[in-house]
Amino acid sequence: MTFKDLRIIEPILRALEQEGYTAPTPIQEQAVPILLGGKDLLGVAQTGTGKTAAFAVPILQHIYKSQNAQGNSRKIKALVVTPTRELAIQIGESFTAYGKYTGIRNTVIFGGVKQGKQTQALRNGVDVLIATPGRLLDLMNQGYISLKDIEFAVLDEADHMLDMGFIHDIRKIIAKLPSKRQSLFFSATMPKDIVALSRKILGDFERVTVRPEQATAEKVEQVVYFVSKGNKVNLLVHLLEEQAGSSVLVFSRTKHGANKIVKKLGQAGISSSAIHGNKSQTARQKALGDFKDGNIKVLIATDIAARGIDVDDLSLVVNFDLPNVPETYVHRIGRTGRAHASGIAISFCDKDERPYLRDIEKLIKQEVPRILEHPFLEEVQEENKSQRNQGSQKRKNPNQSRNRNQSRNSNYRRKNSRNQRNNNRNKSRGRD
Ligand code: AMP
Image (cartoon, rainbow, N blue to C red):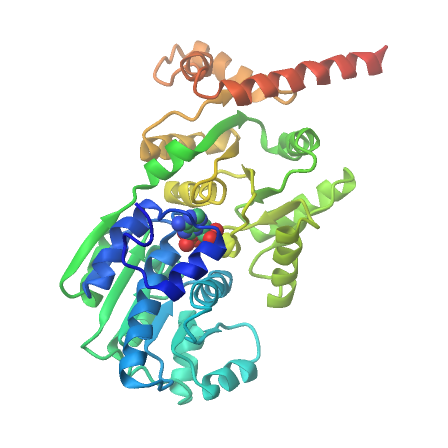
């Protein structure tokens, strides 16, 4: 299947080619015909599947065609609402890239910065508006934005918008949309409240599902290290030294935790930056830019701040903390293994996080292979001891799971144990 087979018009085809996209991803293959056909869409897919192009390309194509028919009038015809500034900026960049030969203009609005530049862009006229909910409502209330000409409405990452408490804002925005429109609704997960919200927005819709378990199991090599809380930083330093030179994204559950990791890595001579909600927008953009350009090799992020991170050659994601919401794990490891690439996701799991690991494995329907050779292993031994003491055989011995998973992750394992052997050799040399 090619983009041409999907009946994409020439100016957009040319732009996609320049982006280096040779073939549509599964979500693009499925969603583009539905959207070009004018139907509403429910997309169950996470970021990293190519979903931005899946909705941006058909929207650009519709606007381009109707512009040619009606002459060019700059009214906001498409609205994309997305939870974070990073994601909004990312989507804006995608519209700009795919639409560079169409003359279609987009602008991005989000909170946390002064509104002057954004209102100026709106005054100049835009066709596509990408916005976070709060700032959108704010500028609507001030009279800078009218949604009356919207023909295409996209709600992106709906599950995260609800997690972030945007439900009332979203309801208010939906209420202002014209009833005749094409609606698109994307969410990585579909709990009850999301299904209810999708019903409010979508008319006669078709559903496309790119299951997270496909995305994770097929593309991302995953491993877990059992390590105590206190030793996590040491293990991270150890792994970063092994991986020197690669771009590594480290997830921390909390902002405070992210800052602490940066500090501790600094003490070990590894420079890194943190992005999270307490940092100014400028600081976040700068850290992200440095990371994308390869000036910083290690970026520590909280889940919310990482939503829009899209780095082409990100080869390693480290879950410093395991998330308590299993879907978040899927989102996180989706940062590596983007589109057609493959990647590695490493998780640290301390005693308190074992239940989270079980939930994750239930969701992804696979056991994450354990790495049992590393210098900070105390806790696994404790686990085995306590299992023996309790006579509990309920949870599988990680040694057994390792054997079962040996072939799946043999490359990673070989490399890891080779490094480990070298390390031990170096250590014993040091002692001599
Ligand atoms: P998204 O899920 O929209 O965030 O896209 C994830 C990544 O895949 C981005 O880096 C896109 O540039 C890239 N991408 C999207 N579609 C394609 C494609 N058809 N071929 C190659 N890369 C793509």
